[in-house]
Image (cartoon, rainbow, N blue to C red; front, side, top):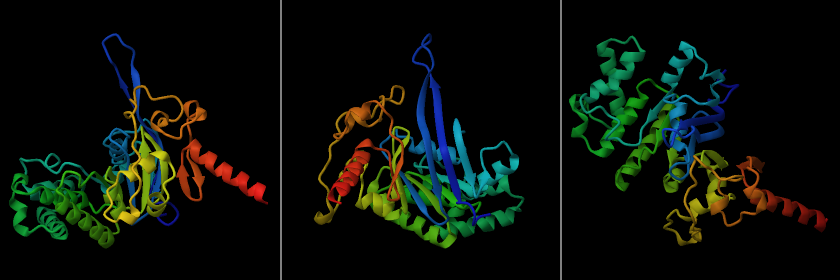
Length: 336
């Protein structure tokens, strides 16, 4: 079965929240996630990028079922993870784990590290206390923690060490998929590199697949195999890392990459400054959600919502890109 289906497949995932602005005001819907689809292969890293409020973290919480999708489908090796079935829920808990952004808030300050790491085993397995301790120490060694750390509390560790503990907790049930929600954004630059290298080493050693959520494209370029760019709850561009970084075609992707610092002057991009603020998900603009900030917007962009289309293996939702490709085809016909 694992050879016939992708490791993880999401189809049209949506998450809507009902909110009220006042006591007598009607309910409104916030479309935090509005139809996101992707596939994740074993041993690969899918990076999800975009500005704050684009729905990245909502997607991560839905993959781990911290939140339940409003609509959509989610499959692990062809098995439906959203059906109300105890076996499916157990499979999801074991095979999909999450590492949260803030290592200072994601660890219980009242528990010792050994208890934090053994808790997933206590809930999901029938291992003895000695067996749980043995597995916890083994995972600690993998992430660069020493045996004496087992009896210590979280406040006794640095930020980088706490994130290593959080990664170790995520690996306790031997998952296939780890959702990493901004796992290095709260760390110093020097520590950030250490944690990223650790994650890549663990991926190679254990065959892990990552859904790596980040707003830092320099980090994404270091770790990702595929990249999905999101804007206001929707995917606007998706492709391999090389496609996105070497040939970004959506105006929003181009703007994001132009803001990424580059040491090599030969690969620096001319800065594209986005004007205006991210639209409110309570009142998104008609047509393309990016139209008010896009320098290439024309009439169609304000009337019709673009859908993802395949351009030589690169998925893009943009009428300007569609127009560019149409002009190329017309030019070729005239030349012939």
